[in-house]
Amino acid sequence: MNQKLSSTLTPLGEFALISRIAARVAPHESVITGIGDDAAVTALTAGMRLLTSTDMLLEDVHFRRAWHDPYTLGRKSLAVSVSDIAAMGGIPRWALLSVAIPSDIPLDFIDDFMRGFLELASENNVTLIGGDTCSSRSGVTISGTIMGEQYPDLIVCRSGAKPDDDIWVTGTLGDAALSLSLLENGASASYPLLSRLLDPTPRVSVALALAEAGLATAMIDVSDGILADFGHIAELSGVGGTIRSADLPLSDIFCSLTAYPSDISCRLALSGGEDYELCFTAGGSNREKIVACANKCGVAVTRIGIVTNYSGVTVLNLDGTPFTALADGFNHFT
Ligand code: ADP
Ligand code: MG
Image (cartoon, rainbow, N blue to C red; front, side, top):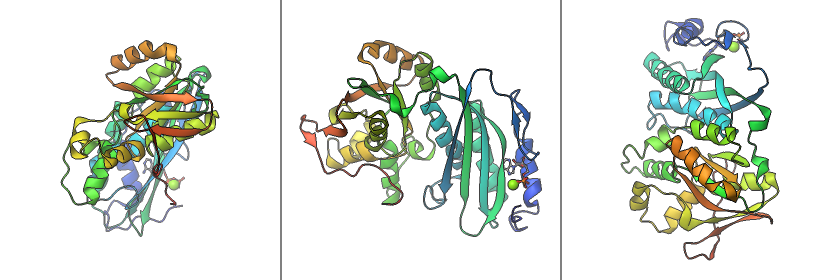
């Protein structure tokens, strides 16, 4: 049972709003019963396992309406979840979307939000199969749940890194954190840099290609900063690692705006969150195959370090000396 949306949001009310959303969802052969019944019915691919992940986006914690237009907010609401499925080597398939909306939000906001959400869904072959809708007394809350599939042997966990594996990362690091810091300081920031924060691209094709080729031993998406996120791989794999600052992939705009090399550029690149790139580990004999695989997907990959057989993550300065005194990534309760 939901508290009904106030008529000031729209004369539509909750159920017409759901119908409005449902009308925009393209059917998919895997969805036997989608939005509209008590539960969705989906057909799983024989032999595959179900992967499930959920994420919340809270106004003024994860996004600000002043910075984030509803269309890109809709895209990002699903992108962060698609990224989780990608990081497991999974094939994204179905999504559930729960929203709590203040009743004074214009219907246009919802329409633009849904356009963004459903566009990113269609780009990634994901079908919206349900959700929940209620009114909120304080801000917009979005909760997206995604399901994906993969054959058991191809699923890539955080726990598989082996000593002497290379540590790799896709794309560039720090752009999203730099955008956030510019916005927070009231500085002007322009696309394409801003889009790295507001409209991140989940790295699905390269993740799937790596998984299908059996090239990655462990994988995670970089949501809290490479240091923290590789730290999760290290911890769950019972290993450690050395990350070379000099090898971190940085965009030209990032280097110029942070006056690279500088303390701030290192800090943002190592500990800045929300890039939604992939960090993965792989045996040293697979280097050429990995580069070829990434090239085919049009995504850059960079080797940034090496897995060690002792615990702890060490960062090496540009001159090769160990780096210290770093906060290690975004943490909600610190
Ligand atoms: P119930 O009261 O049984 O939870 P609802 O009235 O909340 O049912 O939902 C009716 C149908 O609409 C369900 O299929 C549900 O999954 C779907 N639904 C509700 N809100 C959303 C939404 N924001 N996006 C997509 N589907 C939704
Ligand atoms: Mg409900």
